[in-house]
Length: 177
Image (cartoon, rainbow, N blue to C red; front, side):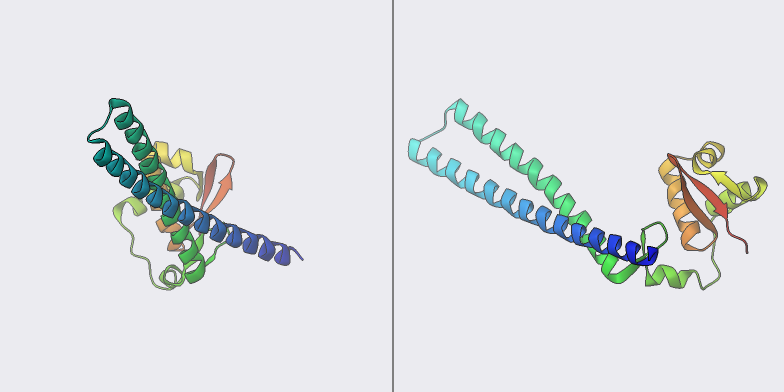
């Protein structure tokens, strides 16, 4: 029964992601149309009136800036939603709900090639009994949080570690080899 519940939750999440994608796409199209119409109206009015008043120029500037900001954020939302939609379509969610593609799953079957930063983090984990909090790793390696996160994701994709949510951070567990 819990398996059915997780399938329903995954389906609802997928549907809401698709709805969000469509909503952002509609807002993007609306912002583009609004920008085109306001520019056209401004140019026609300026042509018919033989010039612009300062208040009209200010109003037009506010409209254009508002449309550009709306366009930027809606386009970014559309892009983010599209990437998420494609990853759901091409992959499957793992135990944390993050989608891993078939390529990443195939990476786990081959012997992992580790870079220097990955080796450093694995060594720190070994010294600490194979279990540490992510924020402790960040402090110990003297790298930025996002850099450590990327390294940990890479190690997790290679099957070397497991990340478990632990409050505001993650608990990192060294996988037994």
